[in-house]
Length: 275
Image 1 (cartoon, rainbow, N blue to C red):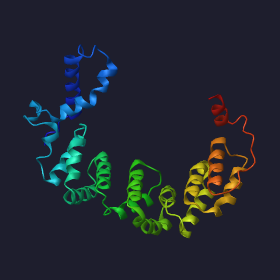
Image 2 (image 1 turned 30 degrees about the horizontal axis):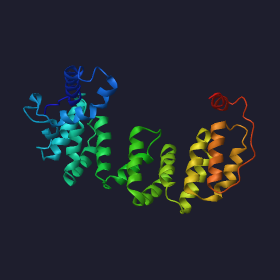
Image 3 (image 1 turned 90 degrees about the vertical axis):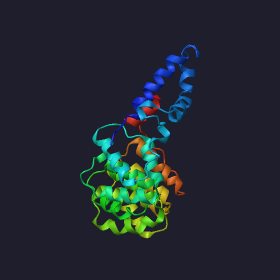
Image 4 (image 1 turned 30 degrees about the vertical axis):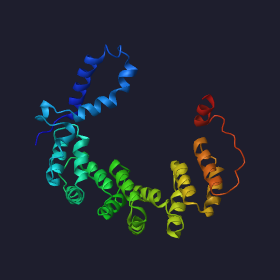
């Protein structure tokens, strides 16, 4: 499968267009830049010799084999050629057939990491819930946050409330990084005692992430978190930015704003004061 660099071809097309039209637009780069969306649409629709007479927008539409297209996507990554959006759009347009092939791709340990991340992204576009448990299991096993974990979390969030119970079942065996990510996901589903217990525990052990977990507590909306938040707002070692976020959480939960504190000398406070 030939991996054509569509980005480079568009760059060439743009340069040629600018040479032809520079005088027309009096070399006004603001005007020329404003024309780029139209130039791109023209590029997409125009038959090209480098595509054997096909237009870019029609090039991948002639293929209906999702397996072949997904393999082609992987080959782009192997050859380090930018993957065309048109190829990805064609894969997702094939629906269930593409879903099955992308799921199979996730089981292939030999693919480039970028291809795996793209498969996760495309499955999310397809609104697939099939990989839910594997995403939960992956996050639970994380020792450190990473890009794949973030993408799995985004996908679980997009699956809605159906993901809540699988995430809760994974808490007991999840590592610290996984529990933190799960707290972010679960904070969107108020009313569950198990989730409140997790968020309260994560905030208690948050360390330099107090502001982040304060925002999760605020989103969850349970005012039982107020005592812990108020105590944290008065901690001697708190910095100004964390203080502001924690105070915001207190107010979001209906609590009274704590007494003002002096932050002179705090690097964050001094930096913002200068601004």
